[in-house]
Image 1 (cartoon, rainbow, N blue to C red):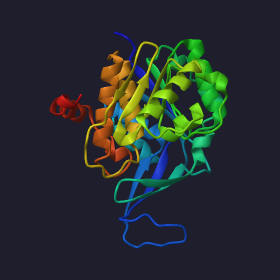
Image 2: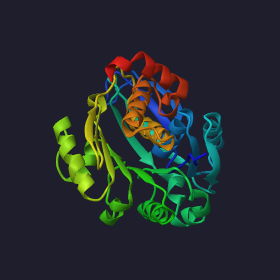
Image 3: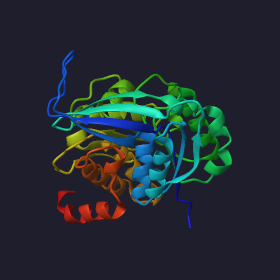
Image 4: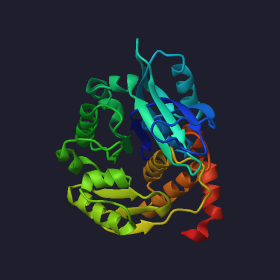
Length: 311
């Protein structure tokens, strides 16, 4: 049987969430919020999503020695995620995020990276034997840039495809892109990569072509309720979103990435993998919280059966 292992290498956070009818303006205080504490971080969200979607998923990450760390790792295991490469760091907090969510699902997020920045290139180098032969490596950009560069360099050496969710958008070495199999970016991240505004599906098409021309094998630009635009060497197409009542869009993109790479690790055709990811994301926005919103495989498959006419 082909190796279906997925390594998700990236960040984890303790999330403190305020759900409010009206997001405050600068200098304003509001008192109508509902509070909840969950776990997030783009890397962890994607890893949990991949595992729940049925992927053979391993998480590579650093957590701190705060009271939340073990609870966080226990939650990963409950989702079916492999945690032997989650490192416990001393005298530092795990990554922490403050999240404010408005009535329409829009959000403001501030992150203190904490132990996430202990995920150094040295940590990645020692994992090369474990990474060898994997189906995919999935990365984001909430860990140090030199760590991301090391992951891509090693992946090229061992011939494992990399999916890079370019989030958050920030400075990088352009020479890395030709060694990336798949770039996934939202509107603002695509603007950063392509150098032009991305506000419509037509904009996304043009941006995807620009990014593809930089040497990336495949590009997906996610557009929220407008779905996504996909560009590969062989085809380009628009994938519409499923219409649902959104509650919280916080981890929609992360769930999309985790589900997508799971489907690709199973050698699903690219269009089918995109559809699978789109369904996972549609389920996610209907649930409050980052990791709590990641759907299980059976729920994604049931959703697709019930909504097949929309594809």
